[in-house]
Length: 396
Image (tube, rainbow, N blue to C red; front, side, top):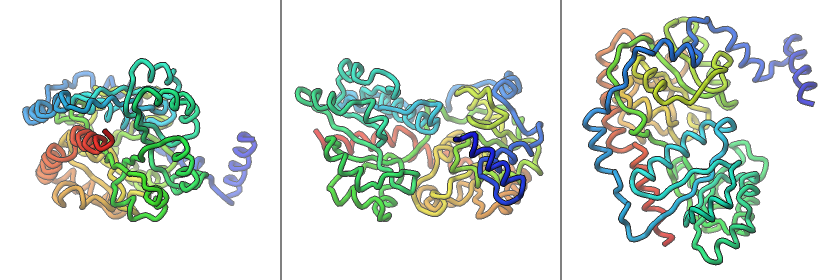
């Protein structure tokens, strides 16, 4: 069936009747000049002489302040996070891995389990009292509700699931899923979006109407992985990100003009045709960022239209002290002061600002410093993990 649909799409495209988004995105990638592109092997070879230094003193001090901060709490939280496979959802794997690492760092016993592992055995051995999972039927099946009910006879277990609405691609109405959550013994919902956004959007109403708590764990930057590194600037600009379907239209709109006019940029990440050998390599990512004069950033439509969230990349680039060219997510000014980024309202302004940034390195340096200090003070994963722990303690 999929093969037949593909043939129909190609035929309609050939007749100039309709272009399927996937075909448009593939054509968009094929238009790039090869000098703009780096696969894993090419990027690694290009950066082989770059050195990764130790974090600066202020990052070390931040780590010192948070290290095992909650290890001796009277209430001993043991958190198990059930995570999708990285090849299925690289974004979810990244944010859950970073959250897990931050929770461990501040002294909370935390374990990350992939959905294809033996979750029941891990629960039996690890004995969590907090369980976090996505609100997916496949994950409920993997966890096994009957097993959870048996486990809860002798063990306290607070279960939280993600708050997803139909606008994010769900076929099942949230109201129906909330009823199922009540029957399955779910205790609370959590979200990576701002709580004010969830409360202002009527689609989330079933959660609040059924007296569920909704805990917000917004994105941040992991200072164990992202920090400033002084090194030679090889690239004018860089973008590292995946090719999820909800990003295609904005990639085409913004990147087409950028990569056709500026030839010393890097576009790298999972899903791109020219990155078939992509690997998750933290050292390579940090080297690539530190070797770039500018980090370019894009958000999805939901983040532009609603004051919902900033993506992880915003915080990561900021903590690496990389001058950042960003589109205009609605929540941006609620989270960062207005002297931290170069903000573009449309694709032409985006292009013009990139050119301006390349010609004004001192102004770039000042704004990058402001974004760095603000992120270091308020928006690391340690801050997010601490808030999450304090929110969870109400259940004990």
